[in-house]
Image (cartoon, rainbow, N blue to C red; front, side, top):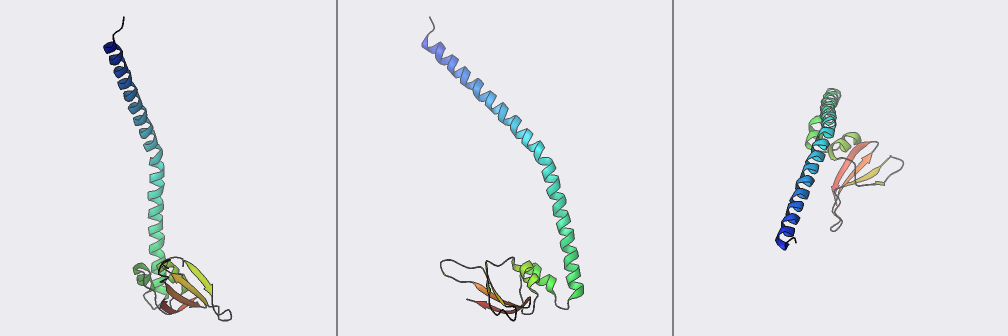
Length: 137
């Protein structure tokens, strides 16, 4: 007759074998996932290099075509009166909200950094694709 101690020992050994097998399977799955990630990491690195190259060329073109130091302003997130709306988007991203203002002048109010609780935002008035006014509201 098998004693309780032998049964308990067998159960412990079976549990240890189960844990060992589970860890071994998880390690294999992890290694497999790492192998699958290598090409994705390589593509991401190449895309990042491409992006940096394109960004450098764009900023060089901006510096060559405009008297204002717009490339520097964009890099530093600075928006100025007279700045083209495209550069505003490059500096601050897309606005959270756009409202039509003066349809004849092609005017719009672009709102950035809106806070739901306080309602605080920065309003940028854009006419004919140029920044004409900045206002904290």
